[in-house]
Image (cartoon, rainbow, N blue to C red):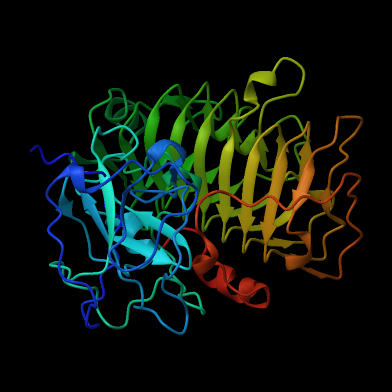
Length: 456
């Protein structure tokens, strides 16, 4: 008989004496298709996982739509007896922390409460890799458990200032030039040449790369553009158009005329901007300088983290307009976390149509509005910190159609004006698991000031 098993959701407990005999998972005839929303959880229960409702949890992690009781919890972190199989081969280890499933994968999974999150053995997408996944309750697993100090849901987030989180790791991930050749550039011409093809490549910026103010650099797919200590890109626009898998990291951007320092446009996707610094000045008027970052025209799955935005009028724009940009609906999934805005007039960010998640950002001395949502778009805020901001949140920008907010009571508003929220507050949260990354709102100013911006 062929070994065509569906992913046997396995939650082994190697430290527990299993009450059921070991069951050899080597035939699909043992498992019947199970399309029910709730899977049997008694010892000896078996079944096939229905992958039709499985959703990405970021990186290599996927959550099945069906529920199964008896999972781990905060007081019994290895109580689950669930075992998981891929084409009849057992996956694991069980009881893995969600961050490891997301970033490492290779069969790791978690059964927490009634939810199962897992990864394929080779980190492919289980929804499309053609394999069968099945589960079995009980028996002795052959997969070693994770270390004793691992937990699937730590109650106190660990402060990490590196590593990808958010939408840039949903429906795939963002690795940039990983595995490609490394090159160091010191001039604009060298930079343009290094990013001009789709070959994976890691490009290090050394010193100051200077352009004329509006000097476009067209970045192709599979690139990491990383600043060495003290690296500056001045008077240059990085155009990330129609491409994917881009990392921009550890760079100070200055004085970019028109457009934006980093322009993500025309269905570009899986882009990560991290530990950067953006600034112009507020004396040249609103129309002279470009924005810091623009994410427009059906672009998707972008994360902006641990960066500083300051001394400008218009900072971050998500969606280039309302009329004529209706195709942005269902796109523009963006995460912004642990960033800092100060001495900015508005747009931290401003957004139309999209789905934007913001957590642990620090907004200081804003003279207009901080976050604006329009045209049916929605912004989820978690533990933001606003200090001396005239209007932290608004759904009403000029005469534009309104958007929506979620999570507004989680934030701290210190010496701020009133929010202007004219639509019903939503309960929307992003589809990826992020709670273990969120820091307490009161800690945000010190944490972000100490760690955002280019590393030294």
